[in-house]
Length: 436
Image 1 (spheres, one colour):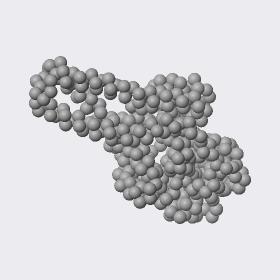
Image 2 (image 1 turned 45 degrees about the vertical axis):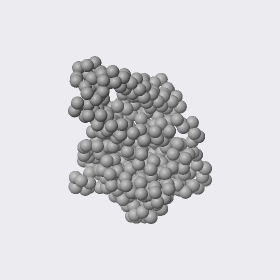
Image 3 (image 1 turned 60 degrees about the vertical axis):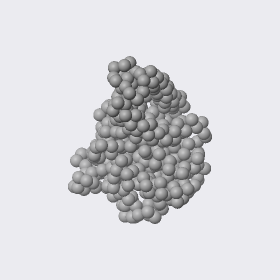
């Protein structure tokens, strides 16, 4: 019958989809299974490099003073060895005034072009000023977001890495409001995964770390050699990392350098953040995917394949959030009707469909349960047990509730990223939810 042919064709397509999802998923399983590898540390250096902290800020008057002041007051680093720059980008509030009051060097960036209202342009403006116009000699620029706080030894650990020859590095990403509610707890565990699992294992295997977002360290020698901050997309941080990887610069993970940032505290905030991630990653990856594969075959550097596999999850969320639910609803309905004799059959017997029906439930259910246990409960539980302080909690009990609900957040994450791949969000002021 024609409907049996349709079922077979769709089943073959689904097998291809499952294989496509399984390949990058195996990489993530590998990172979880090798959680026990020892972290990389950098040799302490007596020599102290000069640091320029750079904060792009759009209407951040409620948090900018505190963020700047904590850098000056809390860093265990010679005060004459670092400055804080704030780029007040198209601000209509008192961001510039409060940043200056806290001690920052304030740069005013007014750009009326709506297409330029994203972090890339104030960052480019600020880096060009620091590297070429400030009249000061710096060794490194560290990008910080307006709501971030730094571990007291952050400068020290990034300097140690720089003095060992590191030009590009990412920190461990903790949170300011990890225990506020379910969303902040789940987001904290999700983003810490990349630091504690992925980044640590990559560093030990000598693969390039994924340098993106808050706390990224860029050496001035690298910035000068590559023409400054050459990024124009809404995912400018990932774009910069991709560009430098293509130039042969290897990103590193400085695990002891911890940066604490604000996590989304509602579905709306989570959706807005993931829309930016999804949209920006798609626009960034599409033109670079083939180039990355080409680099792997010409250099033999596995980092190029690894980054493609890791970021391919952005594309795969469409399959996870759209194809799989639709196919398996259809699959179980069709198998159920066929197995219990509600539709006419010609290619196979009802008993054959009955066997397939229950095999799919048993095998598929077992795989799904295993993934939920590994990626949901076990990885979240381990993070809470070992890294709760870095995550931003006072004790483990504050985060344990998130362990049981974490698999639900993974589903939410896939759906919201999927929405992002089909949208065009802009850079605007984010809602701040820091707890005291």
